[in-house]
Each structure stands twice: as structure tokens, then as C-alpha cells.
Image (cartoon, rainbow, N blue to C red):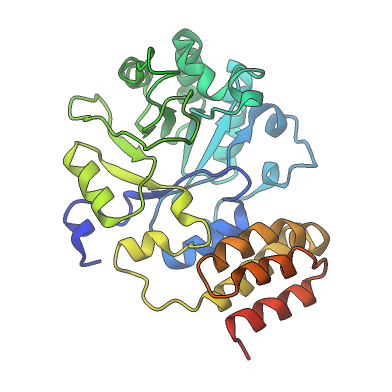
Length: 310
């Protein structure tokens, strides 16, 4: 990696963010093909579902030993269950545990008292962080936001508590919970932070990464820029040139079928097909066609025709 990012960060400091419903094992597998060393974070995993071994959630049974530098993200508000979940994920081969303290959706942040709610309850957040750190031998990180709303931008306080609890690093999404994913992300200077901080939110270009590096961040985390572009991290690090998108789409689909089975994988893959095709001529017609397809063979034919694969 000889580009400008290498002057500031290594390829193990550009993270793939946890994206609910997206960064499942098949998608991570494609990312890994382009970025062998990049830290990748799983979709968030419910501590209740994981500890209870709910069989309707495949990711409860993922084995991470062959996935390289991967962190498993958990969410919940029960101190003991969060610790138990961390142990399970460590035993499954995760290289570090990430605690979700930023998810803004109501079913997590309000009804479950987890995710972003922990920004409002620093006492509970501290108990959870301490319990998880004590429960495992691998590093623990947190992913959080600037605060609950503009009147409560207290991320520094939470980061300080995290450091006191033994958390090794944090990812900071540059929005409040109230903003959800709206508006432009803001990245405050973090030079005085007690632990390394990874910048997250609207990180899409080399300039974005260089700018947060100048603000004291120890790395950057790519999220929505990965949609339909699992090579994005490698591209930013000058490692992906001239990718054959159609072949990648077919390979991703095969991985999804292998993981979920055809009946589940095909409808789930429609969103990925739409993202991959964004900006390509006749993509609207392609998406309409894909949304009518229920079988893997027909979907593969449509993909081959759209990308001109013989």
C-alpha cells in the first residue's frame, strides 16, 4: 500500500463498520478477499439471542477462526448476559469484542435500554464495560456517538469511563442519537482522548480519512460506503484496481446461498444486487427484474446478462 493513506494509517487501521442486515458472514467474506488485513466488525448480536442460542439467528453460531482480524459486536443491557456473550464470541474465534453503545433505533435504544441508551446511563455502561473486559482475554472496544442529542454531547465522559474500565479503543460516530443517520457527520478533535479513537460517519474518500487523521484519530471506519462496493477499503488503500463487478456479485450470491440456503438467500440478496448496480446504465430495469426473481438460477442469469458475463 503506497498511497497517501499509508503515510498516516496502515491497512489494519481502516475498519469495516458493523452494518445491521448487511455485514453478515457472506458479505464479510467478500470484503476479506480484497482487504486481507482490514479489521471487520460483525453485525450487532443480541446478548439475549446469543446466550439463549436462538436457532432462528444464524449468526449466533458463526465461527470466526477463519475470518482474520474480526471483532464481534454485542448489544444489550444485562451486565451478566453481556459478559456471557463475550465469552461465547471469544470461544468462537473473535479477535476482539465490540460493545454497541450507539445504535439509535427505538427497539434497541429505548425499548431494550441498550445501544445508544447507554450514553444516557453511564453507570450501567461502566458496569457492562467492566464485566465484559473481565470476562475475556481479548481486547474490548466500544462503538458510540457524540451523545444523545445536541444538549448532551458527552462522548468524552463516556470515553474516559471506557478507558478506566479497561476498554482498549473506541469508534466514534460523528452524529448524536437524535440525528440518527441524517445530516453531515461531525468529527471533533480527539487529541486528548485516553484511548485510541476510530472515526466513523460519512467516511468515503481518501481526503475524509486524511482529515480525521489530522484531528487525532487513530483510524477510520467505513460504513455505508461499502454498500455495493465491498472493495471500498482496498480501493482507498490503493489495493483494488479494475474490479470485475459482475463476477463479484455472482460470488457474493454463491456465498449467501451457501450460508442461508437458496430460499432465504435470494430475496435477501435483492438489496445487494440493487447496491451493486447503482449508477450503471439500465440499473432501474435490472432492479425491477431482480425483485421478481425467486430462484437462484434465474437470478444468476439476470446478473450475467446485466454485467455482460458470458
